Image (cartoon, rainbow, N blue to C red):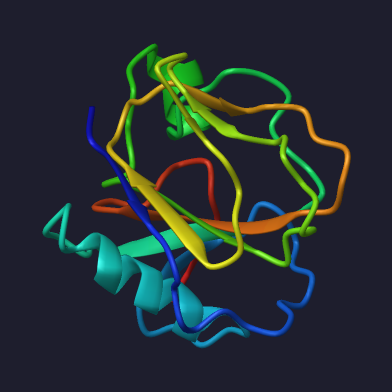
Length: 158
């Protein structure tokens, strides 16, 4: 399975301001409050998925999670065609994790459980089914999806 876990990421922000969730599709040179961290995470992902694509979308998750199993994909394209348009990879950075949190694992296809941990990055390949398990203590993550071509489900910004 194409899953990579990297601990001790050194550039964790003290705080990431709230954003409209999910974000628009950003070109790599479009400036926004989270641009540096998104581009840094994409650069790290290129060690495993060697293309940076045309841009990315991202989402900050404050004590939230998708409700079900899912694949990161262009939902609008899927609903219109029945076919998947997938990102290059999926990147998750955990930070501001309560020290006593032992739940809220990233469940990769019922084959791998990855516990959230401060400064941990998880990078996984396209089309992998995953979900976040229930949790009861505070946790924050940022998810970045680099795309070769802008998804139909996102408004593009230059």
